[in-house]
Length: 287
Length: 256
Image (cartoon, rainbow over all chains, first blue to last red; front, top):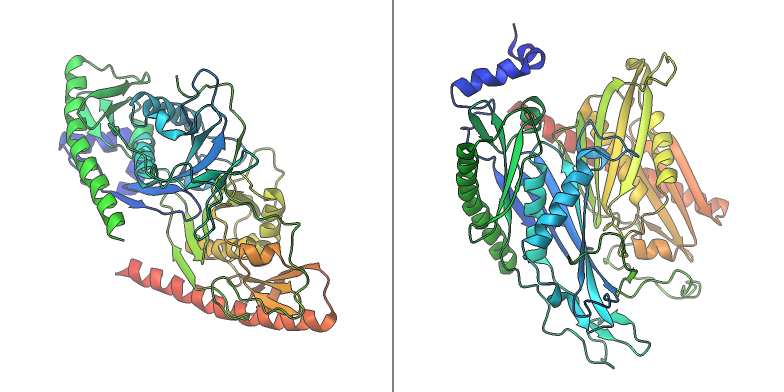
C-alpha cells in the first residue's frame, strides 16, 4: 500500500511505527522542537509587534496602546487585554463567523500565564495617577495552524512586549492625553518622556508535549495532536521556575516520571528560545 | 487580579485621528504631493509570494506599500449539507480585518460589502464547472490597511487560486483610481482615499482584456471615466505580468 494512503487510513499505526525507531515522520528525534524564528516589528501601524514561526505554525502579535481611566482600587496601575484570534485563513477546520474551539481556550491560557508570570509590572503602565493609564491591547492572530499554538502565541506575545515602543504623550488642556508629534511646539510637558520601553522581568516560555504510551513527543504538529490526544503544556520563566503546568485530560495518564522528563525538555527549550529572543532583539537594535 | 474580567473600561486612542469631515477645499490650484513621493500615475511596488500558509490548499501574501494581505484557499471541498445540489461549483468568499489593521483599533470597515465584491470579481474568472457539487473557500485577512484594500485583496486572491490549482480563465488583476480635484491618482493610500472626490475600481483579466467588475463612486464626467479606465487597464496588464512572473518563480523553485 502506498505510504500516503497508509498515513491517511491508519494514522496511529503510521506514527507508532516511527516511534518504535525513536523518530517522527518529519525526521525529528522525539525531544526536539521544530525550527523557530522570530521577527520583530512586523506591523507598522502597531506600537509593538512580532511574528513568530515554530515549524509551520505562524503567529502575528501586535500591541496597540490606548488610554483609560484606572480603577478606583488601583489608581496607579494600567491594564493589559489579551486576545487570541484564529481567523479562517489559518486552518481548514475554522469557518468564518464561527470561532474555533481552540481560540478562547488559548486566549484564556495566555491571559492567565502572562498576568501571573509577573512579566509586566502594571505600575509601569500608569500615566497620571488616578486619571489616566495605558490599556495595552495585545492581539495575537494565528496565520497558520500546525500544532503547538500556545507555544508560538506565548513567544510572539513576549517578543511583541520586548519590541513595544510606548508613544510619548502629554496631557492637553481639555484633560485628554494626546500623542506628541515630532517638532511640535510643546505647550504641555510630555507625561512619559523617560518611560518609552517596558521593563520585562521574568519572561515565560512554553513547551507543549504529547504523551503517548511511554513516549514523550515535544512540539507536536497538528497531525500528531489530532491522533494522540494527550497534551501537556509546561511554562517556565527565565529563572527556570515553573509558572504553569496544564494537562487538559486525555487518554494517557501523566506519572511523576513523565512530568519530570517534560520539565527537563522544557528547560532545554527555554534556553533555545531565550537565545532566539535575544538575537531578534539585537538585530532590531542594530537597525 | 490585574485585568477585571467583566468590566472592560472605556478607552480612547491618544493618536490624532484624521477627521474625515475637515477636508481641505477643492484642489483647484494646489498641487497635491503624494505622501510617498510617487507620480500621480505610478503604482506602488508590489511584493507577491505564494505558499504563505501551509495548512491551506493554496495561499498568497501580497504587500503593496503599507497594505498587507494574506489569502488562503480551501477546497474544492464538500458543500454544506444544507446546500442544494449544484451542477457547478460554488465560491465562498470572506474578508476580515485584524484589529490592528487600521490606525485606530477595531475600526474594521464594511466586511460583508468587501466580501461580496470579492466574490463578484472572482466568479467571472473561475471555471466553476470543473468542480461540481463542491465549494471553494476564499478567505482573506487584511493585516495592515494602507489604502486600496479591495484591489490588493482581489489580486492576491487570484494568485492564491492559481497556487491552489483551481482552474481559471485568466488571472484577475485589480487597480483603483482616485479623483482628487482635477487630478487622477492611481493606487491611492489611506490619506488620499479620505480626501477623494470619487473613485473608480476595475478588476480585469489582463491577457483576455475582459473586465469582471467596475465600481464607480462619486461624480465623474464621461471623459474622466475614459481617462481613468485607460489608466487602470494599463496598470492591470502590468500587474498581471508581475503576478505571472511570481507564479513562474514559485513553480521553478518547487521543481528544484
